[in-house]
Length: 346
Ligand code: KG4
Ligand code: ZN
Image 1 (cartoon, helix red, strand yellow):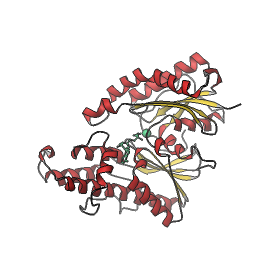
Image 2 (cartoon, rainbow, N blue to C red):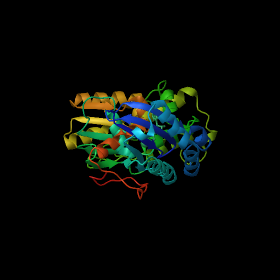
Image 3 (spheres, helix red, strand yellow):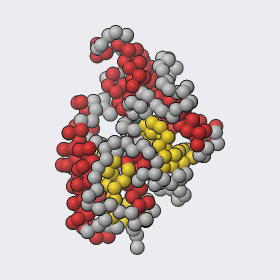
Image 4 (cartoon, rainbow, N blue to C red):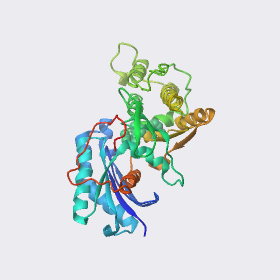
């Protein structure tokens, strides 16, 4: 009999549910984005996100289940991302999962959203992606992990301030692009010259630490646009080619940091495979340059399928790793908003 799992995701601003088989087949999937709600603030507003999850969660779960053709009684468990994320958003997903678990008499399994982004790289593949360097590059995270297995991992390093995706989004605002700005900025960058402006590559040359810092790069772009000492870049009217050059030079600076630090992690751990997930993993320049850098070191690189790079519930298939061990949570399960750094945690 096919083993079935319902997974729920609501860590940030996507409300998502999926029905997934033990071998990673997605039988039903539904995602409601909130971009329209956060657009005018140029960033995710936590209170609005939580309330929107509340409105959309049940219709989203309903749609994923209907699409799958599965009956709730046939589900083996209910998985939910409980950490890390925005507290109000996480609570809506968890409360929904608890309600369904109670109503349908199913066990509940809390999962780590960041590890699920890495796990997404293995969906649809017949062989295991572990051991690997897990690299999560998203709107909220830029973190490197040494992953022995899906459940046995160690934090190697990450950003000490902004996440890469967040930096894309903020620079996109400076360029007058709509939120979320990453994909728009990347589109604009295609017509620009990545060598035209020498933006900084923070921490890249410091080989003693596998850390990233993007807030200074963001400020460097801001000063480039407005001029040192000026406060309002809205008055700056750049020619389209200049804008494209800023976008391309900025994108190249971020990509150099991401690729450089990832290769330092490969050298440090000796692992021969890199698995990349998170929204920024959809960026074409990043994909091709990381691919080339890995090839040059004889290392395999696996990106999450493009449709599973940004937040989704299918990556909740990670829960199978716990279900197989009979490792379930109970109804006292709570959310953990902060990033978990030590090794060997679930
Ligand atoms: O994984 P995700 O949904 O968010 C978190 O879990 O935090 O990723 C969303 C982020 C946004 O910051 C978005 O601008 C960025 O990923 N992003 C991109 C691209 N597509 C999405 N950034 C750069 N280039 C892209 N093509
Ligand atoms: Zn995410």
